[in-house]
Length: 328
Image (cartoon, rainbow, N blue to C red; front, side):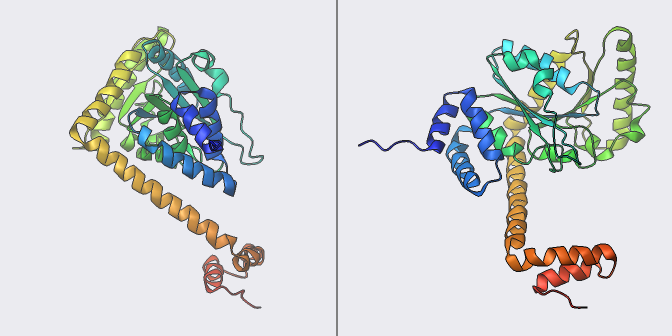
């Protein structure tokens, strides 16, 4: 008698066939925080691992209004029409008050989301740092296993913590607006240091000349900022006219291909996997620690005393580590 397949086996077979519905269900599974789902997700990822690793992994960031979704729509359709299978993991900001998220990226990429060679997945950022959702790395692997050879991770926007996207992609592309050279002091230095390539967007119409001037100014500023280090290419493009999109993509592809040939891509991914492991260790330790009743029960009282100023944060931590509630 043939053993019925499990949910994980069904998802695995669907993913390996390139079934978009199976991919959506798999990502929902890996994003779940339920204990039983986490176990299933770990099993699924372990089974999928041999089918991952061949895609171009590209991170995309930029200030709100720079046109990240419009850029991805235009470039993604272009790549799909050329025969690529393109996945976009678009992280939407969550409200700090309600925790809700608009998840509007799929509607902003209407043409791309309908393309048979594309998969667009908007995901709430939640409380995760780095401009990426809690399980973006796992979702990326699912996309690769489903046969998507180009995977974009679109981040929420430029911020101090958003450099985490560079920890999971092969190439980090930063989009900027005309005037970037004048506004360089307002840009987070860390994100400029991590960028592998920079594209000044909306280089069309009356803005084309300003965009070209901004690219020149930014390239000069980066030479000063990075000193003797490698300076990323600065290019201009327009998602409206399509001008420069091929140049930007060819730059991304060339950098990744060169890194793969030299062995530096393998080393980069190895470092990323180790950092991912360390992050999961931290999460597991925190969950195990606060799952202990004696620590969990002590937290409300300690928080109240820290907030009232009768106990220092360091004393409260020491009390937790000692496993005892302070008296008085």
